[in-house]
Image 1 (tube, rainbow, N blue to C red):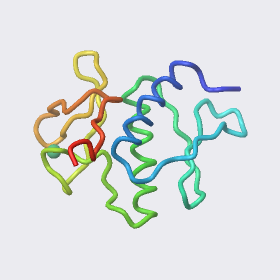
Image 2: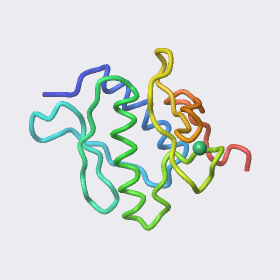
Image 3: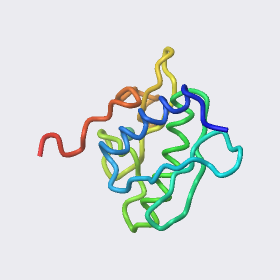
Image 4: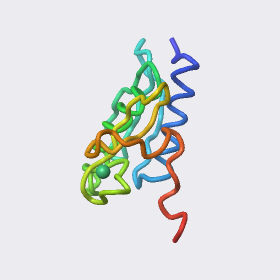
Length: 125
Ligand SMILES: [Zn+2]
């Protein structure tokens, strides 16, 4: 059994955000059982299944993976970092007016950017 196309497209979008702003990258593999999603492996060899219906739910799962993977590498376990409050808290994945977005949870869920469109962290450096 393989993951469905909608899930794969959602995961691709979130992995793009991960490439833009995360120092730890997953090794994405097919599950060995009939798990509906895909397995993200961290550099330390631990795997975590990610599956969700809709972009925000998939982003939530990838965020769980990223936080654990960053922590395991001794990095700041915050992904994606909130641009308004650096080193403070991560953005939350949610749906606002039908669009899956990253929001700052501290300010009434202010949308920061659509999921899949995080700017590269070093774009201006
Ligand atoms: Zn914030």
